[in-house]
Every structure is written in structure tokens, then in C-alpha cells.
Length: 137
Image 1 (spheres, rainbow, N blue to C red):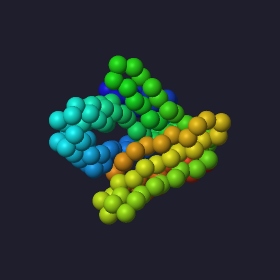
Image 2 (image 1 turned 90 degrees about the vertical axis):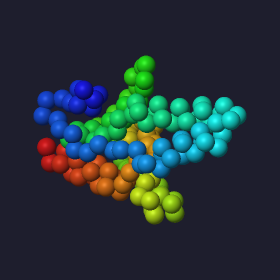
Image 3 (image 1 turned 120 degrees about the vertical axis):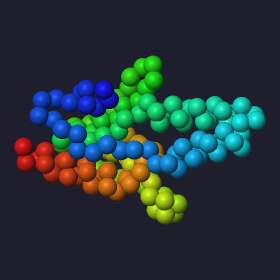
Image 4 (image 1 turned 180 degrees about the horizontal axis):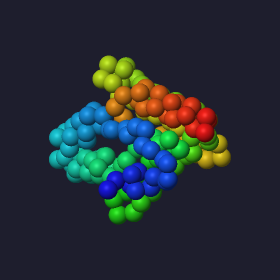
């Protein structure tokens, strides 16, 4: 069972899960193909793909959650009422292909930056919708 579902509290529901964009995997494959012969490409490929395979990103009715780790577990969790702002960064190709970075800034903690997720504007809207729902509770 995925970490986010395991960690849900009573009455808490998953609102939206973010997925890595296909371009993230394409960059890893390009590094393998073009740099693999000097071994750095193999390192880049596995570092990027292990991050993709072991990362869960989601927003629930109470919090934002990012879980990473293969052998160890590391989470960034921000309660929705503690989120000060969400920044979306999309370059030209990000706009064309539909991917971008999110930077979620919370009170009293460092910001969490998420790379190359698919449809970042919709994920940002899900955070804002969940924040609006938690404000009514």
C-alpha cells in the first residue's frame, strides 16, 4: 500500500496525486544514451529513475505530502493551513509539453520544490481547493 494511503488520518481523504511527467524519464534516458559511455550517464539515469520510482506526491484534505526514499523514508508534510503560497514554474517547453516545477512555501519551514510533474497548474488548483475546504472545517 502506498505511503500516502497508509498515513491518512481519520476523516482524511486523498484529493490528488501528482505524477512525474514523461519528460523527466526522457531526460534520464537521454543521459544514459549520450553519457553512458563515460559512466556518468549511467549514474544520472539510475539516480533520476530511482527518485521517480520511490517518490509519492499528493495532497489530502488536511496536508501536502511528499515521500521519498528507497531504503530510508523521508517525508515533507505541510498542513494546508500552514501553506503560505504555491509557485508554479514552467519554461517554454514546460508550457508546450505540460510539465513544470512547484515550490510550496509554508510557515516556519523551508519550501518544498517538486520537479517536472505533469500538469502542475491542476495540482496547484487541487492544493488551493483543499485549502479552501479545510478553512471551512
